[in-house]
Length: 357
Image 1 (cartoon, helix red, strand yellow):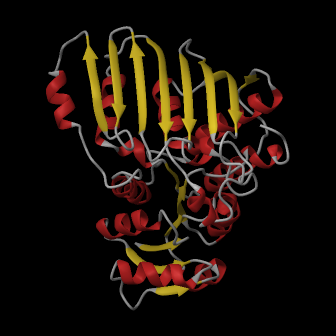
Image 2 (cartoon, rainbow, N blue to C red; image 1 turned 90 degrees about the horizontal axis):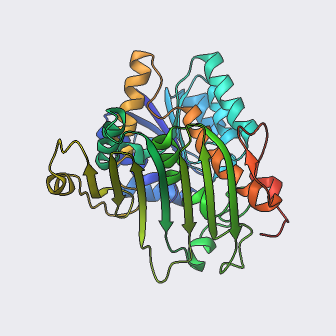
């Protein structure tokens, strides 16, 4: 299967490794900065036959890849995705899928019209720990779900933002919730029943006065099934990343996943006593080298299978929209100082440009 990558920055190594491990035919890399492309070609010992481009439309015209991954700045995702679809490409889109509800809807609608597969790259759903928790949920081991909490306590310093001027802007990114916390927000919504009734959020910029968006976000979520969720995310932790954790509390079960990117089951308590908690904690204890974890490779495998067997990807565009929608709802609640009802008909990060946190 012919594969191309658009965007060769910070996250691109995970995509290249996933493509290689899944046997994809990497035909092209594209980035506005040729030095980024050359770095990846050298680092991953890629074939000299791989074409390199600084213009993605030219790449699409000449290479006609069947599968394209988008790993550019977030504000460019929708434009590039929609153009790729014009060339018949199936897509893996780095988070967030877009920065507006309208653009997410356009992606979903066009993919359906053209019968193309679109995957939102929320790779943590494929963590062994998360898959084990999801299995317990689907077997109703928790019983009635009461509430869940998602915490991201990370550090992002001045150097991080200086390396890419789009980071922390409303036009191309968003703040801690949209960039650093959206994976865990995706997991919380997925685990707690997906359908949200209302959101109350508060955001602030406490430390990073050189960016536009927030470096702290806190939210209370009410789900339509009667359960609740809490989100707490920040990039202000000193001096380095502390944790990303997900707690789930039900009538008959309590689970905590932690570690760098929820790769570790730290608590496993169920009334049915079907398994040994200590054995579970020992078995589901991965230690990835960074916060991106190991999920890209199985995510790619799933997308390839979805294309071959004409089914929806495990994490489809609708899932990407739901994660985006929840972050936007928190922003909207914070800036309007009100309870926000879902679903959102329209909302975008750019709506909050120039407004105080």
